[in-house]
Length: 121
Image 1 (cartoon, rainbow, N blue to C red):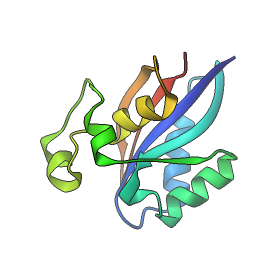
Image 2: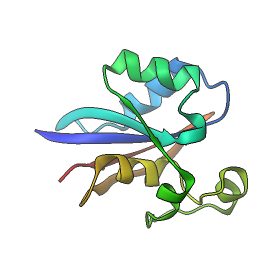
Image 3: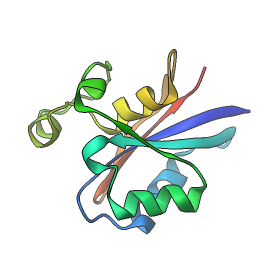
Image 4: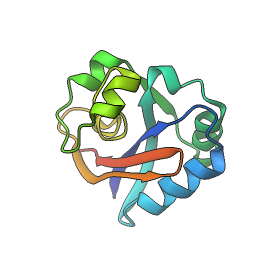
């Protein structure tokens, strides 16, 4: 069974149900979610904490430098201006999944949350 990490970018105040809806929609059916991963400055967001808890997985925190070092297919100048890194969801998914991880679902924006999924190798 494949293990997946969902990278999540979110606006402040995003509710857990919005995070859960997008993460659940994005997960491939052939494995299991093992973590949510996000930008360190968002790791204290109550909606992200509650979503991770509801999913029974840890919420991983990545620094701007860690996320900036991950090559991604969809960098964003707008995200860079807001956060200091050109990618949160895609980079956090890959970074959270560890060495050799593969991005299997590119970022999708859903309201106040963005999600991408990486597979552990």
